[in-house]
Length: 140
Image (cartoon, rainbow, N blue to C red; front, side, top):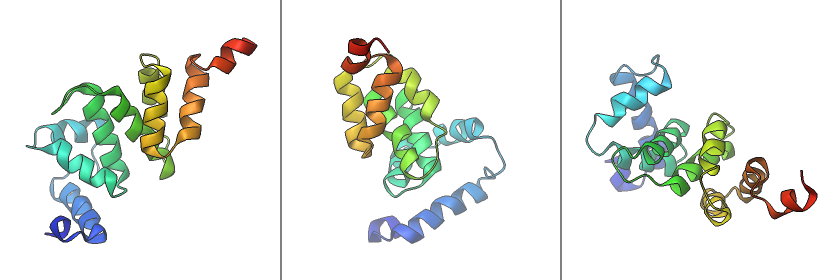
């Protein structure tokens, strides 16, 4: 009901309460994701939570796109949500973003950064993966 009413605060609280009721709060993140994948339409819920600033949901959405769980594999969307976690002060998805960026074009990495509002971090990914024209120019 909070989602339908557009009440972000109540919906985020409901997300947290759902984790508590499901007994997932003390479970490692990987196991939480496995449990969430068994729920119908979990990617939609993860995306909703991600858009509304829930870091666990951002991570779950990114992993869903990375692993093609409930959707087609989409590296741009996966990197988008890993980078979005940085806006919330959580760098847990950085290594995953780097690994995915190695298999993406410059344009795809830049698009992921744009979608996440993290253009500067997209440039850092380009540099880290050796896909930046500047890196090649200066042989960094």
